Length: 167
Image (cartoon, rainbow, N blue to C red; front, side):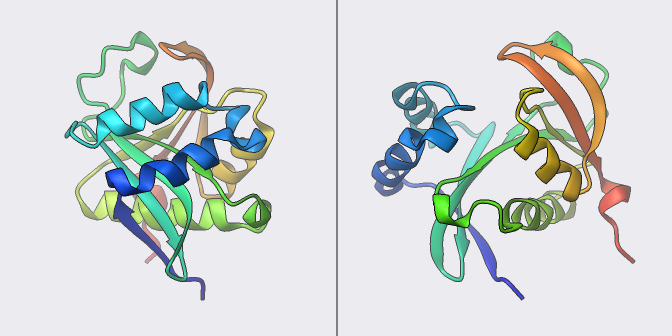
C-alpha cells in the first residue's frame, strides 16, 4: 500500500514549490508561477486556506490546499451545503504523473476533511483539463456542471461525505 502523508507548507518549501510551478504540466493550469507562489506564501498566515505538501513514502511530490467556502464571495458557488470546502492540487514531480497518485492522495485527503466534519469537497478544473477531470472522477467526484467562477471557466465537481463513506 502506498503511504501518503500531508504536512503544512512552511517558508522552507517555497523554493521547491517555485520549481514545480515552473514545470509545463503545472504552469498550463495554474496562474503565472510567481503569482501562484505569492498566493501560496500569503496562505501561510491565512487561516481560511491551508496549503500542504503531499509526501509519498516520506518524500515531497505534490501540493494540495484546502479553502473554506462557507461564505465565499463567488456567485458560481452559491447554493453549496454548509461545511463545503474546496481543494486545489498538483503533482510537482513529473515522473509520478499518470500512475494513479492523484486520485489516491485526493481520496485520502478528502477522508481527512470528512473526519474533520466537512460535508462536501469541491474542485473546479478548467473544462479542457481532461487529465484532472479523469483523476477527480476516479477519486469519486461527481460533475455538477460548467460555470464561470471568479477565476474563470470551470467544471464544478463535488465529493459528498456519504459518497466517501466505505463501510
